[in-house]
Length: 95
Image (cartoon, rainbow, N blue to C red; front, side, top):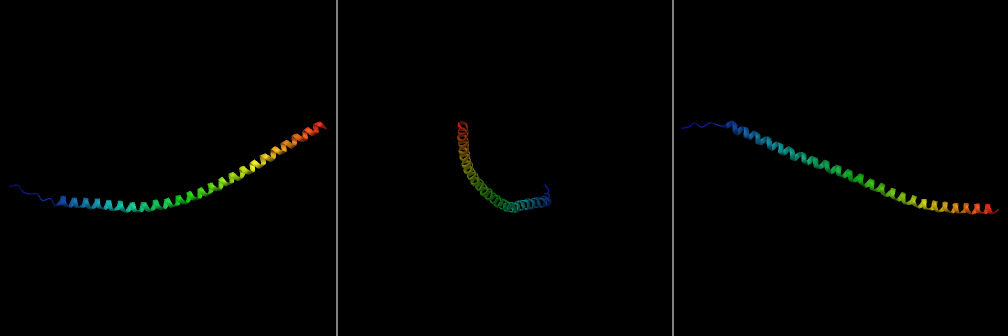
C-alpha cells in the first residue's frame, strides 16, 4: 500500500490566501464608501458654482439688454443731430 502524505501546509496556505483575499475585498468596499462621500461633496460644490455662474449670466444678459436699449436711443439722437447739422449747413449755404 501507498503511504499517504500529510498536506497540512497546503490547507494552512489556502486559509491564508482566502483571508488575504477577503481583507482586500473588505478594504475595497470600505474605500468605495469614502469615495462616494467625496463624489457627493464635489457634486454639491459644483452645483453651487453652477448656480452662481447662472446668476451671473442672467445679470450679464440684463446688462446687455439695457445697454442695447441705450445704444438705440443714442443712435436715434445721433441721427437727429446729423439731420440738424445738415439743415443748418443748408441754411448757411442759402445765407
